[in-house]
Length: 207
Ligand code: SF4
Image: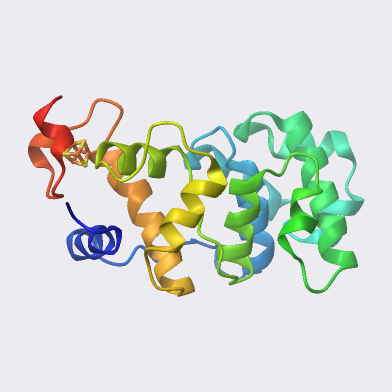
């Protein structure tokens, strides 16, 4: 069986660097990534893009505006990404946190209503350059199918398992997560396209 780090190397060889997280020209990376991490919950990135563009057009992709803006106006701006009632409140709370504290820690983010572990770790890794590996349903699906983990595993267990298996390097953390997402959207999909798979995986023998 391949080692976890070999999976990373194979994915990188096949797809190349993903250079996440994409940020619009002239925008503040910390703000845009943090806002994007909230908006992307339970929706596709194309819907997030529409909301981000609305915020940019309204000159509101900054923490000061997000705190001050009328809640109903904010809901309307982020409507394309769905769940806008909760997401608008979360964005306001998150912005208040960023404006009130310099060194944001994981527990600060988790204390904001609407921010779970995956969102918190996305902000920590991609906005704040802190070494938190982001795991999600794609990560779980791929590593379960490849035989690395059992089907039922908690977020923390999966995160520890991966970080213990790869070098502690934020660039690797960023790329590996992005590559897993890309791979699981293209090949290791719900109904996997094992014929085109280049990973050494026994799952293809049983699907
Ligand atoms: S062989 Fe199939 S199940 Fe295994 S990693 Fe490749 S696409 Fe996924």
